[in-house]
Length: 172
Figure 1 (tube, rainbow, N blue to C red):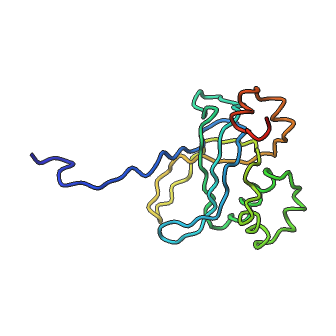
Figure 2 (figure 1 turned 90 degrees about the vertical axis):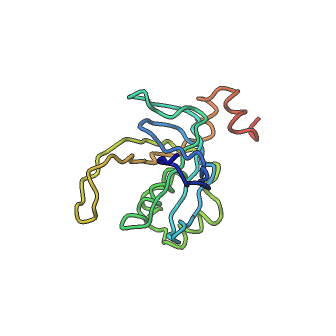
Figure 3 (figure 1 turned 90 degrees about the horizontal axis):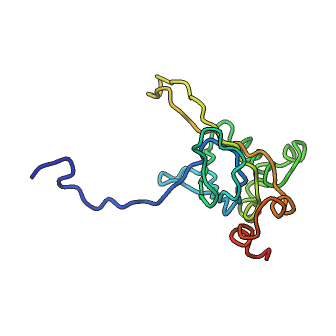
């Protein structure tokens, strides 16, 4: 029998990657690190857990407990995007961010300073313009914005005792 899958073998499932979807959330930063692709391209990889859904306008938002990942790729706006993430994670001012250089920003990842922070995240789908020179058609893209830091007091006030025990076992 000859078919579409004949002769194919050894394809392993690589995981259960979840992306941010349209909505507004409180997300716990499980891990933020500098990672490298198989082709040795560095990027920032952020693993998160949704602890509260604030806005689900189109009925497609992530659910509490979902664990989306986000990548910030190197390019023209890389340091700016990483600093926006740092602003939300630590509640820093723009002036404090402007004073951080690349090495100081990298140290935040190396020292795992982001892990355990809670941030408000807003995600919405935008359409990227076609770029025929690069062979790219117009396509949807989920823009992820790290809005602000969410304090422990705010989390304790908003979440149930069960959710606090589930996501922050050291608090109980």
